[in-house]
Image 1 (cartoon, rainbow, N blue to C red):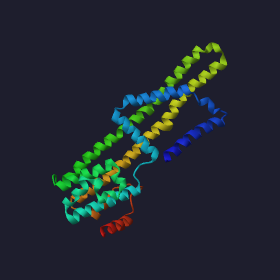
Image 2: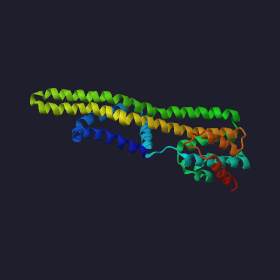
Image 3: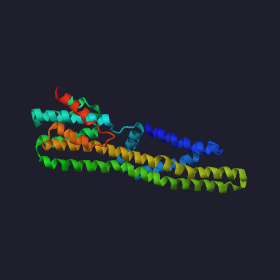
Image 4: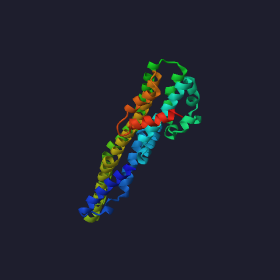
Length: 286
């Protein structure tokens, strides 16, 4: 919910400063300007986005607002899951992994880690990485290249909402000018009504310019950056999976393969090595 705190600060600082100079915040409530600017911005979003990208934008923005990006606990659960899967393969042979990988929803191992099982992209990436290992269709040293190609495709796909949001953000100041020009046109049509009426309409027109710039640089462009940070976290999650599976396929011991993956993580989400090792050994002892 940190994003909502930031939005509150932006609004409070803007209105606070305006009111400190004697401004009346009610003057800024110009419904027509809001309709023009936000309506045109929505139209730009729809025009620029194929339907699947539009759905992706909505999904990414929702994740930003709800704060759904992987944290240390998610990575710890992932590494525990991978360790358990690798231990099954090491003890019972790779064919024993088939029941878990082919139908993960019914797997007792996957069910223990809902942060992975309930996330389609993460679950699919793990299963897609393990299936060639089980089938033996490719050599272990070729698996990493296969997973890198899949990861790169997902990274490109996840960047589409960022580009669209930046487009809308960059368009908003211009849209604000359009709204202001429309307001000036109304002002010129009412010039015979006297200075007071003209002043009201000019103020309303200027609100359009203000709103376009304010929404662009106060909300939309920062939101695009937040989506980008979340994308990087998601990519790091998938890269962690890739490092572990590729290492296991090359013959690394389960504990070593998981440790290689752990060390690839940023310090902000990286589980402590000693604590993780104790937890993994406890799993292996069961």
